[in-house]
Length: 176
Image 1 (cartoon, one colour):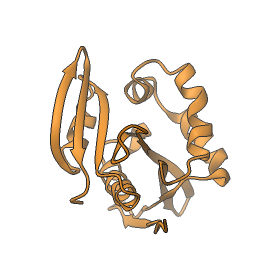
Image 2 (cartoon, rainbow, N blue to C red; image 1 turned 180 degrees about the vertical axis):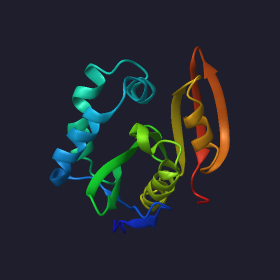
Image 3 (tube, rainbow, N blue to C red; image 1 turned 135 degrees about the vertical axis):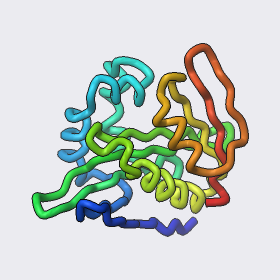
Image 4 (cartoon, one colour; image 1 turned 90 degrees about the horizontal axis):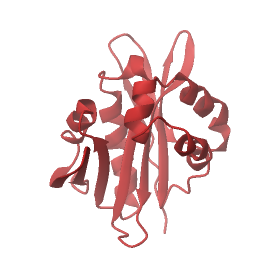
């Protein structure tokens, strides 16, 4: 299978450019710095807990993604002061449902609510669709309103269900 890896960019009103691309081994330093910049709330919302064991395997998983079954992409902000990783999105294909993947995304706090998550999610959706993924299943805590708003901007809602304090949303990303 030949996969066309899409890279995209956008310019923000403050003049920062945002480049989106797959993460790889050469991004280890920036991914580790990103991880250290996550607030407790961002960590809680991303990992559905206080982090701990989930975060210890997260960085290696991002850096070793095959970009077919496990996609990990980053949004990099660049301005006159330098460049930094500001958001990370993942799409992890389910082995028993090859047209469906779990979707997760996180942006460091100063970049939340600015649209970078939506841009990165749409970028990742295009890459995931190119590998045969049609549906994303996202898990979010019921109080995570930003994730709810982001999910409403990508794909067509197929299903939403509440499991205790966890909201599970399935989106059809094939129409993006």
